[in-house]
Image (cartoon, rainbow, N blue to C red):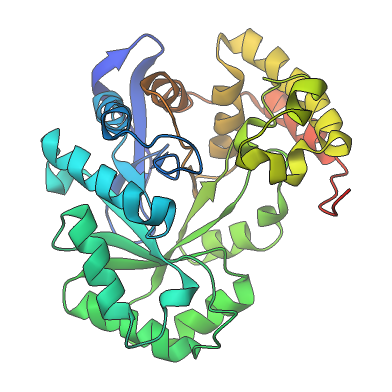
Length: 333
């Protein structure tokens, strides 16, 4: 499905139109940039409902209609806030696409119906558009076909619209798809940004070959590629990013050089670094749908402004080459 340009109902400066595309093979029409809602949790600090509602409201106003959450975000807080906000804001059910995730720890076949029912209750929905397995059940050894068939049964029963996999290696994704009888995996969700591009090795070609959408989580690398902090400021960060290897001095020093390249391109287009970094992903493949989080309406508006335009090939290649020069390490110390 060729992405269409649609005028937002309440555009802001710099957000005059937003692209829409199809989610996998489902036929669901989704915005080219979605909204991730991990921020609605103590991990990111949006723990007041009114703050979360303001974020969702601005997303709807600028045309974002794909909302991604998970059962474990804020121990259910994210689902509760998102569902309540969509109801109170009068979002039409047929115009928004809600995606959530079930963690690997909940994949015992007897637990799956209870977990999904609890998720739907928090969201205030009769069914969810997309249910993604958040990670494989690596600690409990639940058989792949048993949990995939249990999830497929809930598709047949009308509680789940479509199935997806998050943070799955391609080999296990293929095994999970083999277990399904009448439905297919429509979405692969992985960490993917200008600094961390391993998804291009296997996941992206796999998604393209099989007509899936690739939802890119952490598409801004938690802000590490935007040059918002000096090296000294990055070392003093105290939130969950303090544990992220990207913010270690040896890595962050390299990312500051990438950030300078992003800033230079952004100035040529009259865009922000975040918009350029997200647009780089969109330009790379029509399969990719970034789902950046936002802690404020302004951030939602900025992220939405990443769609509706394209980097030139020369600027896309400039950033491609800048990022390929990175030598990141995930070892501690």
